[in-house]
Image (cartoon, rainbow, N blue to C red):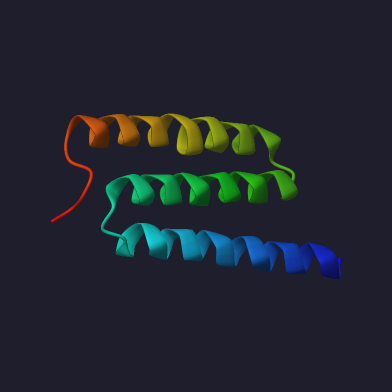
Length: 82
């Protein structure tokens, strides 16, 4: 039980760290990847909480499709924010 709590806290700090990095960085590709990492960690948290249907949806839409659309859009425009 204690191990599960420790793992949950570590994943929560990973999500917060990735979100802060995505907000603070000036490189838009790095920000999109950090948002995808945050979404992937959230999907793992859903899996640990025994919600596999929500975890699969979050991983496929949040981490996969959304990040791919962001990377494509950034590739078609500029990579660096001014």
